[in-house]
Amino acid sequence: MALLTLLATITIGIIRLRNLFAVVVLGGIYSFLMASVMIVLDAVDVAMTEASVGAGISTVLMLATLYLTKTQETVPAHTPLLPLFVAVATGLVLVFGTFALPPFGAADTPVNLNVAPYYLENSIRDTLVPNVVTSVLASYRGFDTLGEVAVVFTAGIAVLMLLKGKRNMKPGPKRRRVR
Amino acid sequence: MRLDVIFRVTAKIIIPFALVFALYVQFHGDFGPGGGFQAGVVAAAMVIFYAIIFGLEAAQKVFPPRLVELMVPAGIAIFAGVGVISMLLGENYLNYSPFAANPALGQEYGIILVEIGVLVTVSGTMVAIFYSFVGRGR
Image (cartoon, rainbow over all chains, first blue to last red):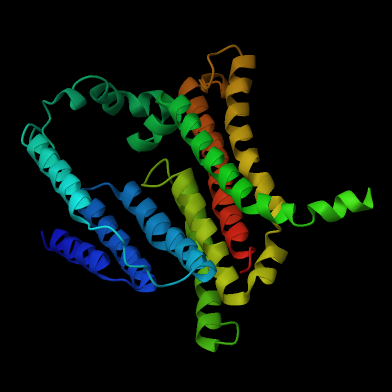
């Protein structure tokens, strides 16, 4: 509860602030708090990823972007009433949806009844790997993980093309002259 | 920031241990939390940390941009290649059972190989994106 209160406080801070440098730093703090929430929920893998990607690398990339642009957010020209209404309505629908969810960690939900018991019982017999998360990710569901790596690969290639492509356009006319 | 003594000394102390921690997360992922993705991100974060403290040129001397950009497709090639090898050995795609006499041991070897592929692609992608952001200039 304390963590969620801090998360809400930081979110309000991010909304109120106009200085983007402070917003990026608050975003890093938000990611660290999110990682703590994940640890409370016993998802240590996700917490590690959130702490290093969310708080570490993406904060650095945001700061690098701020170096290339301005650090002050411009005041929006339109009123924020319609976006506020859409956000509040979506949030209310989502909160309404959580009422139908089973209690946290319940063992008799469909998620925990189909293949999960098989993985938990047979992971060591099938793969000799005690960490079921690893054996599901890399062995039982190896093809899905290959797809995930392909997503990382595609995103990386796309960013590299966007950022490096423009630099090649400048010497373009010169090269044509040499030919 | 290159002249700041505190940052430089701290970085020199932290970076080797964090890189060893990345290897631990990588190869201990069978027993504890972690795996290729987390290890790749920790390793990439240390390269980025090194570049922030000691300058982009020093980091690119250790990890040249060509190598980093080669790592992006190399990792996924390792992953897909493991699947092709298991097909050549007469099993389904990405079924690692034929990698050892004991099928379960084969699964464990396959998991280790595949996680190395994940590590290579993830760390390469993170560092490559950082290099292209920082190398852009104003």
